[in-house]
Image (tube, rainbow, N blue to C red; front, side, top):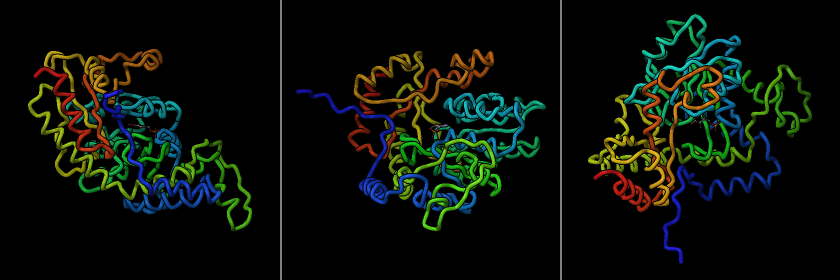
Length: 387
Ligand SMILES: *Cc1c(COP(=O)(O)O)cnc(C)c1O
């Protein structure tokens, strides 16, 4: 008999009967594509973030949201967009897909977020936008970033993939910049399988992003084939196929209704980790900043061989041997050959992001974890690092 514990999947979503029933109801309704459930999800999301429904648009990923937001912002081709080297590749790829040029500004080593002073130092006459990423759910310094943007007349597009419920000085992330882009990928805080949302400051630009996300068509299928009679559409731009399906929104509606409950559960796990690891020779996430609400998306510890007595990659393997899934968020962008070859970037140019990327490990932090799962993670970490 196999006595090993079940593998603890990193970022496992918590799916309840409500989601399952809604997906089944959606299938039985016969309307799977973009329709009434997507419209409801957009209204709910707008209410959740405190913006009018005309200023949100659901899409099929955060990558798509970032891409069409940059296009809808009307930034001229080739212009530079400043972002962080400590992010998922999609952030940088979206800049490239929009025909723009990424420029990296190093992170603050404590917050792991883009450093406003580094943004200023990276601005050139060709800079047109800043793309901050609220890493791990920790809000970027939006007061300073927006001041820089105003001073230099720059567009701001917030990557809120980790930060759906986070706030800076009482205000929802994604509502500071011209656009906020959210992800509902399976490991994120609200899940639709694949999915994303655009929040924008300008109704006109959101309307343009919405058209770009569906072939450049002036009317979507629900409005063409719904019960109001056939409506002609016109193609007004060469758009993309980025629309969210009702099947996805069926999951998201119920996920969104439990966003607070899940945040509280992750916060409790976070606190338990903080207490359990306080005496261990590993780096812990900095405390949340005053006047912010941290999204508690990723609990990242730093494994420095000189201090912890184990290499980061050996730590990852030992966790896997203990049947616990982990993540690395992220090997810094300039570590990847594509960007090195295309832009000549070297990791040493962004020393903070590079060091963090070589030492970081994300521990499981999912609302689906039991107290027993949490203790298993703690025991495994204690057993692996120097005591
Ligand atoms: C997950 C993620 C994305 C991409 O989200 P998708 O919905 O998978 O396209 C972008 N940026 C960051 C920081 C992410 O973590």
